[in-house]
Length: 203
Ligand code: FE
Image 1 (cartoon, protein in one colour):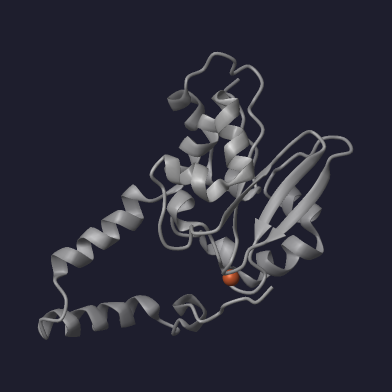
Image 2: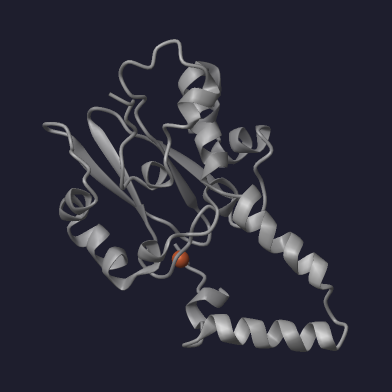
């Protein structure tokens, strides 16, 4: 499958923050961008778009079997039902963790990531070590993240591309029967939706 690496993250200079600030200063000074608009964009990615969106998708799938079925069949559509759409989320695939199979997501070539449901990728997701080791030795990587696999559980690694972004549907923790969606969503971490953590109910 072709893989688009024309994204800016693969061409970042050594001091991206400084360069971004220099660019912003010039653009604002020349009147080419409105600083308010920039702040609104930053707020969107920092606060409104993030793993809390994905957590709501997971919680809905846990409580509503029909929604879960739609999510597994057409993740882009099912996630869109909750209003989470946009760049880097156009072609979503949800992969379900089961006692038989644990799913792990990586982008081996850059850092493709489902922004509308998970926000901005963490630094480790973009690291060379994660990108190569997740494929070569996924069980060792999972162990380092503290994920305890079940006896006989297979590990399936999904390589994201510019065409397809994956969302892991974690297993619902035992002892959460009757919990509402809000309470369940609070148990769903970003890492659980990448596959580098499990969801656990408080003891
Ligand atoms: Fe990528």
